Length: 129
Image (cartoon, rainbow, N blue to C red; front, top):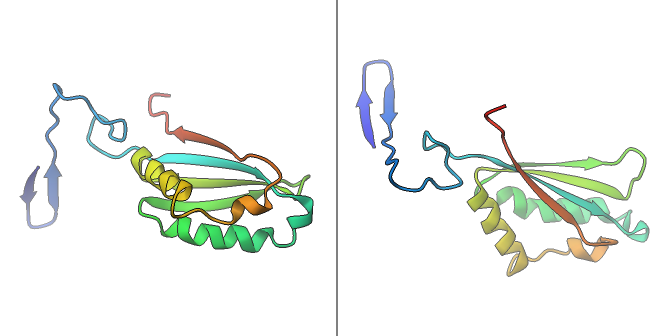
Protein backbone atom coordinates (compact mmCIF):
# COMPACT_ATOMS: atom_id res chain seq x y z
CA UNK A 1 0.00 0.00 0.00
CA UNK A 2 1.30 3.43 -0.89
CA UNK A 3 0.67 6.49 1.21
CA UNK A 4 0.72 10.05 -0.04
CA UNK A 5 0.59 12.91 2.40
CA UNK A 6 -0.27 16.48 1.58
CA UNK A 7 -0.70 19.50 3.79
CA UNK A 8 -4.45 18.90 4.19
CA UNK A 9 -4.98 15.14 4.04
CA UNK A 10 -3.45 11.72 3.69
CA UNK A 11 -4.52 9.38 0.92
CA UNK A 12 -3.85 5.64 0.91
CA UNK A 13 -3.85 3.85 -2.41
CA UNK A 14 -4.26 0.09 -2.51
CA UNK A 15 -3.05 -2.06 -5.32
CA UNK A 16 -5.26 -4.87 -6.57
CA UNK A 17 -3.69 -7.91 -8.14
CA UNK A 18 -6.42 -9.08 -10.51
CA UNK A 19 -4.60 -12.37 -11.10
CA UNK A 20 -5.26 -13.33 -7.45
CA UNK A 21 -8.71 -14.45 -6.30
CA UNK A 22 -10.50 -11.76 -4.33
CA UNK A 23 -11.59 -12.71 -0.83
CA UNK A 24 -15.35 -12.95 -0.38
CA UNK A 25 -14.88 -10.42 2.44
CA UNK A 26 -13.39 -7.78 0.12
CA UNK A 27 -14.98 -5.87 -2.71
CA UNK A 28 -13.08 -4.93 -5.88
CA UNK A 29 -11.60 -1.91 -4.13
CA UNK A 30 -10.18 -3.96 -1.25
CA UNK A 31 -12.79 -2.72 1.23
CA UNK A 32 -14.44 -5.13 3.62
CA UNK A 33 -18.02 -6.11 2.80
CA UNK A 34 -20.22 -5.88 5.91
CA UNK A 35 -22.60 -8.70 6.81
CA UNK A 36 -25.99 -8.40 8.47
CA UNK A 37 -27.15 -11.54 10.27
CA UNK A 38 -30.72 -12.12 11.41
CA UNK A 39 -31.14 -14.59 14.26
CA UNK A 40 -34.82 -15.50 14.54
CA UNK A 41 -35.66 -17.00 17.95
CA UNK A 42 -38.74 -18.07 19.87
CA UNK A 43 -38.66 -18.07 23.67
CA UNK A 44 -40.57 -20.58 25.80
CA UNK A 45 -43.64 -18.83 27.25
CA UNK A 46 -42.55 -19.87 30.76
CA UNK A 47 -39.15 -18.21 30.17
CA UNK A 48 -40.56 -14.91 28.90
CA UNK A 49 -39.95 -13.06 32.20
CA UNK A 50 -36.24 -13.93 32.24
CA UNK A 51 -35.71 -13.60 28.46
CA UNK A 52 -34.64 -9.92 28.44
CA UNK A 53 -31.90 -10.58 31.02
CA UNK A 54 -30.63 -13.73 29.28
CA UNK A 55 -30.61 -12.02 25.89
CA UNK A 56 -28.92 -8.93 27.35
CA UNK A 57 -26.20 -11.01 29.06
CA UNK A 58 -25.60 -12.98 25.86
CA UNK A 59 -25.32 -9.82 23.79
CA UNK A 60 -22.70 -8.28 26.09
CA UNK A 61 -20.15 -10.75 24.71
CA UNK A 62 -21.56 -10.50 21.19
CA UNK A 63 -21.26 -6.72 21.06
CA UNK A 64 -17.73 -6.89 22.48
CA UNK A 65 -16.59 -9.53 19.97
CA UNK A 66 -14.02 -8.44 17.40
CA UNK A 67 -15.75 -7.24 14.23
CA UNK A 68 -19.22 -6.68 15.70
CA UNK A 69 -20.63 -3.34 14.55
CA UNK A 70 -23.74 -3.66 16.71
CA UNK A 71 -26.79 -5.73 17.56
CA UNK A 72 -30.43 -4.64 17.65
CA UNK A 73 -33.18 -6.73 19.21
CA UNK A 74 -36.61 -6.70 17.60
CA UNK A 75 -39.74 -8.03 19.33
CA UNK A 76 -42.77 -9.22 17.38
CA UNK A 77 -45.69 -6.85 18.02
CA UNK A 78 -48.17 -9.73 18.01
CA UNK A 79 -46.09 -12.46 19.67
CA UNK A 80 -43.94 -11.39 22.65
CA UNK A 81 -42.07 -14.71 22.60
CA UNK A 82 -40.72 -14.01 19.09
CA UNK A 83 -37.47 -12.04 18.78
CA UNK A 84 -35.16 -11.24 15.89
CA UNK A 85 -31.58 -10.26 16.68
CA UNK A 86 -30.09 -8.09 13.94
CA UNK A 87 -26.30 -8.36 14.06
CA UNK A 88 -23.95 -6.29 11.92
CA UNK A 89 -20.42 -7.57 11.28
CA UNK A 90 -17.41 -6.01 9.58
CA UNK A 91 -17.03 -9.09 7.38
CA UNK A 92 -18.12 -12.68 6.86
CA UNK A 93 -14.83 -13.84 8.42
CA UNK A 94 -15.64 -11.92 11.62
CA UNK A 95 -19.13 -13.40 11.72
CA UNK A 96 -17.73 -16.91 11.16
CA UNK A 97 -15.19 -16.45 13.96
CA UNK A 98 -18.03 -15.40 16.27
CA UNK A 99 -20.16 -18.45 15.35
CA UNK A 100 -17.18 -20.71 16.03
CA UNK A 101 -16.66 -19.04 19.41
CA UNK A 102 -20.33 -19.50 20.35
CA UNK A 103 -20.27 -23.16 19.29
CA UNK A 104 -17.26 -23.78 21.56
CA UNK A 105 -15.89 -21.95 24.57
CA UNK A 106 -18.30 -19.01 24.27
CA UNK A 107 -21.49 -21.03 24.49
CA UNK A 108 -24.19 -18.93 26.15
CA UNK A 109 -27.28 -19.76 28.19
CA UNK A 110 -29.56 -18.45 25.43
CA UNK A 111 -30.47 -21.99 24.37
CA UNK A 112 -32.01 -22.72 27.78
CA UNK A 113 -34.89 -20.30 27.17
CA UNK A 114 -35.62 -21.12 23.53
CA UNK A 115 -38.64 -23.14 22.45
CA UNK A 116 -37.02 -24.34 19.24
CA UNK A 117 -34.01 -24.13 16.97
CA UNK A 118 -33.00 -20.56 16.05
CA UNK A 119 -32.90 -19.63 12.38
CA UNK A 120 -29.81 -17.73 11.22
CA UNK A 121 -29.83 -15.88 7.91
CA UNK A 122 -26.91 -13.77 6.65
CA UNK A 123 -27.13 -10.93 4.14
CA UNK A 124 -24.65 -8.71 2.36
CA UNK A 125 -25.31 -5.39 0.67
CA UNK A 126 -26.27 -5.67 -2.99
CA UNK A 127 -24.19 -2.90 -4.49
CA UNK A 128 -25.30 -3.58 -8.05
CA UNK A 129 -29.01 -2.85 -7.54
